[in-house]
Amino acid sequence: MEESKRILLLGGTGAIGASVAPELLRRGFSVYITSRSAHASNEPGIIYIQGNAKDDAFLDELLAERFDAIVDFMIYTTESFAARYEKLLSAAEHYVFLSSYRVYGDNGAKPITEQSPRLLDSVNDPEYLKTDEYGLTKARQEDLLRAGSRKNFTIIRPAITYAGDRFQLGTMEANEFLVRVKNKKVVIFPKEMLNKQATMTWAGDVGKMIARLVLNEKAYGETYTAATAEHHTWGEILKTYERILGMRTKLVPLDVYRNVVGRQWQIKYDRMLDRVIDNTKVLTATGMRQKELMPLSEGLRIELYGFMKNPKFKTVDKEMQARFDRVTGDASKATRARRKLSDVLRRAREYHKKGILKKAIREKLYRVQPLRKAVHGIKRVFGKK
Image 1 (cartoon, rainbow, N blue to C red):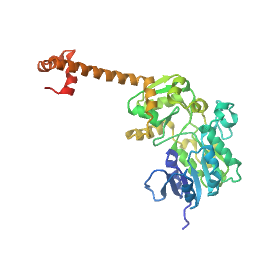
Image 2 (tube, rainbow, N blue to C red):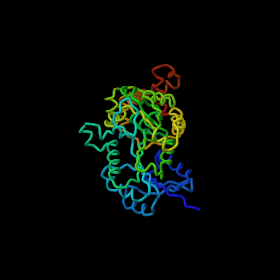
Image 3 (cartoon, rainbow, N blue to C red):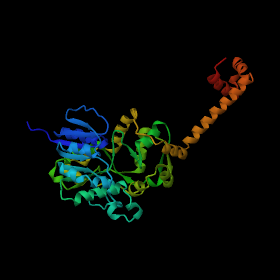
Image 4 (tube, one colour):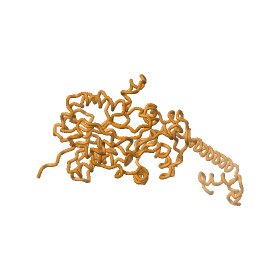
C-alpha cells in the first residue's frame, strides 16, 4: 500500500488551519501541525508537533524530515521572511503561502479579482508605505516569492474569515467586542463604516479551498483569493450580530472609534474600502460552487452560538476596555453604583453609632424611607444585632 503524502501546517491551529487539517485528512494525506503549546489529536492521521516554527533550529530539524507540501500560516516581518522563504520552497514539492485580501487597494465598486491593484503598487502615501503594516507586509512577501527562481508556491489571499474563537466586527476582534457582549456592555461602531461593503467567509469553506489546492500542479505559481462572493455592508453585518447575540450598540464618529480601538491603517486601507470579491478563479480551480458555500447569517449563528456557550477569550486589553467604557457610559454607571453603595454604608454606620439602627430594625421602621437602604446596608456590614 502506497504511503500517504505528508503535509506540514506551520502554525496551523487557528480558525483556518483547524479547517484545513481535517479536509487534508479526508483527501488521504497525513497532516503534521506545529504549535507552540501542546495539543492532543483525536485523529490518527493528524499529528501535533510542539515547538516555535519561528525558531530556526526547530524549523531546520523539522524540515530535515522532508514533507510533500507545506502550508504556512505564520506571520513574519518582511525581513524574517526574506531570510527563510528559499529554505521553505526547497523543503517541499509544494509551498502554500497564506497572504491576505488586505493586500488589495481601492477597487471602487468593482469586484476584486486576483489582478486587482494592490496597496503596495497603487497607494501614494509616504507615511503608510514606510510602515510594515499587514497589507504591505504580505504584498512584499508575495513579491519575494515571485522574484525567486522556484515556482513551486501558491499564494492564498483569504478575506475576513470566521469560526471557532475568530470573529471580527469592523477592526475589532472577539476578545474586544464579544467580551463586552458577555459582560452585558455596549459595543461601539463607527457611523462612517456602516455603508462600506465587506466579505466574510466561513473558515470551513476556506479550508476546503486550500485543501483542494495543495499539491495541485495547476496551482503552482498562482494566486487565489479564498472567499465567498457573498457580501454585505458593515451595517448589515452589525445587525446580524445584534440579532444573534442581543448585542447593544452605540454608533460613534470614526475619530472616536479610532481613538478607542486604534489600527488607523487597517481602518483607512481596508475597512473603509468596499471589499467585494470575485471568487471565480478559486471556484474553478477547486471545483466548488458558490451555492455550496455557507451563507453568512447561518454560519455566524452556528459559530457564535457554539462560542458563546463557553467563551474563552485571549488576553483582554483592560486599557482598551476602559476606553470603551468611557465612550459607552458603562464606566459612569459603574462609578455611580460604587458611590451609591459607599453612601449607603456611610449613612448606615452613622445610624449605627447613634443607636437609631437597632430601633429601626426592632420596630420595622426601615419599611419607610430613608431608613430602608441604610438598614439593609448595615445588615450586610454589621449583622442584625
